[in-house]
Image (cartoon, rainbow, N blue to C red; front, side, top):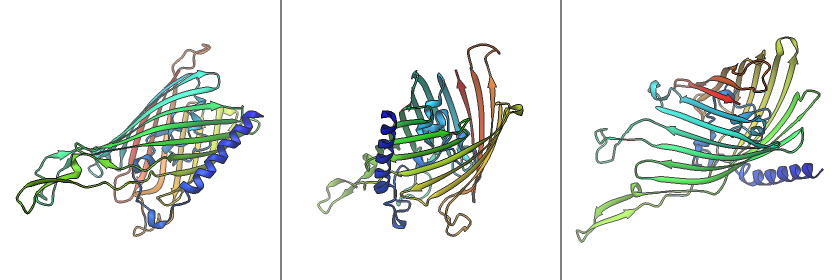
Length: 358
């Protein structure tokens, strides 16, 4: 009973926070937040169906969708994923790539601790200035990074919750911006075989941040012919807070250990249009999974009014390879994941990753 009360207390806090931080957004604030890379899912498995797995995400993918799902890690899980965003470095469209690494370990029967790192790079960008607009001044390479430390707990057989603390860092050679944010999430399962799942997560809640560094200063000669150095002040930017609500249902088929899962999620963004995601996954023999999904937002079909490069369609597949001998207590396995997200006027986004489970 005490655990149930705690869960409802956490939900109440999340709702109160989301009322002010999430639904306070309006059309005049669209696109004005900082650290928008936090809204890009770097994990190959969950992006295959549009991050619709808020209710049923498991393992390290939970760092993006719903941190409560981290509690399903059996003993130890290690994962790496690479995303070539809108063509990536080899596609010559965006030049952007994302690398994500995660580690999770079960500390005791009901608790899992996790650590993840996401790094986003853009390749070499030519340096141009007002005085020298031609790209003959060398290059610079911005890097966006966030480090996550999380804890997820199993309160009851039906209720799990988690909290994620993240440090955000954005740098070039002479400018740096840093921020701190918190994620929190809850998952609830019910049904004879836990077929029905519900999830809610609040993400990227934290204080505003700004940039600093020598790149914000400039030198000029004043009227007295003295060299002077002045510095621009960076305006503060709020973090892209969002609230996710998800629901999923598993249709289980005993023959060949098949399952069909339907998942749906709604994302309320404080600084972007809201998203609606619908996903479908089919699994066979607990080894092979294929999935597809669609992420909809207002005006996504109108090229003039669309505010995202993604056109909504996504698909993916996974292969789970057992590495332990039959009959042994060990359940070591390797999972290979792939996903594709369609884009408008740019090449699609490809992601591939691998996960070891022990």
